[in-house]
Length: 101
Image (cartoon, rainbow, N blue to C red):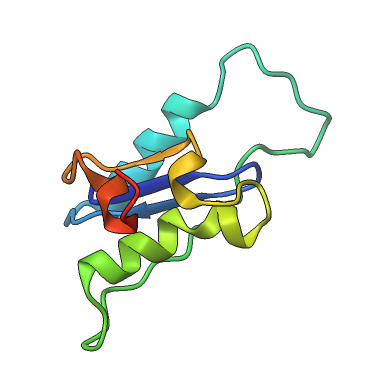
């Protein structure tokens, strides 16, 4: 997983996986607590998800930065490196992308 960010109401993932539908199904299943109780008709997850391949003008690093900056755009933190619910499984030094290691 190149980049991830868990927001209060949605999740961003940048990954390369030919079985992305299976991955999302597993991801949703693992994050949904078994003991959680919902009101009738209420669901934790929407039925589908939005995905797209990288466009010609996009880079992995650029899309990753966009994902990591989501909490800043939402006003949750002043700087992306301050948000504890973001990261990367590929770039262990992802905070260095922002010049604040």
